[in-house]
Length: 299
Image (tube, rainbow, N blue to C red; front, side, top):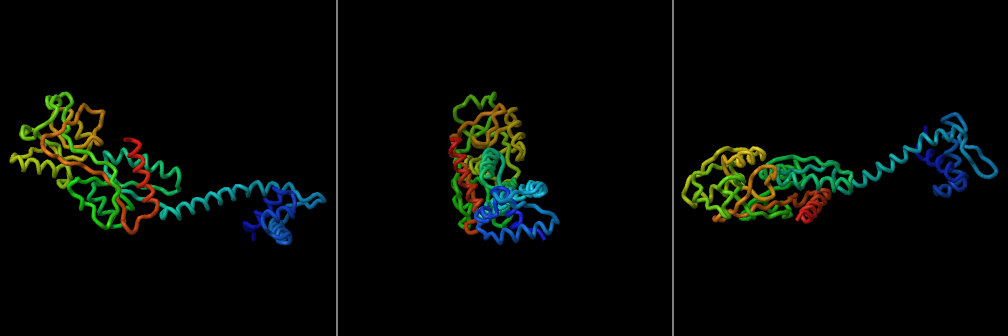
């Protein structure tokens, strides 16, 4: 039966041209080298090495066999390095939850950087922040990119580690060619007739801000549509059909839309990278550091 030690001995003899030098390179004794060669030749039923006064050389069949087995060790070395990397990463597949808009601008670049230095695979799950946090606590993802209001420090919870990445003020998204774009600042009290494009999830941060402001002003909030499709949101606003509440990082420059601040305090949206406090694999922590660098470079 053949084994890797026999293959290593044959390749060492080919490289060093001597049983003695091959033994020294492998840190074997010469009898051990002779034993492995004899066992391999017996298994294959042919001589693989010709002993000469000046040393040893492979026979024609020995050279053919050595050429065929050499790539095996290249693959073995590569596999050993990959296993060591995955062992150190703490997982073979890193699952990350994220939201669209800002997430789509950060996560791809961070994943590419992680995979340039690690064999770990990455799977991305798109979901709203509350769902990402549920998946994280349930062990369905290893990390998540979420957003929340600056006034909600307890949104994430003490069981998670939070890395703040971006803090952006909420602004009103209006049609670039519409009358509201000509104003330097908007007063929502004067926009009682404006229709708003809202999220499908009524608990979404921007929707809560809008409801809070409208309650404080004592005016009803008109909804044009509920959707999480960014292209639809931008398209409706660009046509002057409604307004939306968003941040600079979520604006699609392909649409004729602009952001305007409001007289009222709309607060800030904070984007954070979160992991479980006691169960995050090293790869998840590494991805967090990469995200911080990506954000810093883009600033």
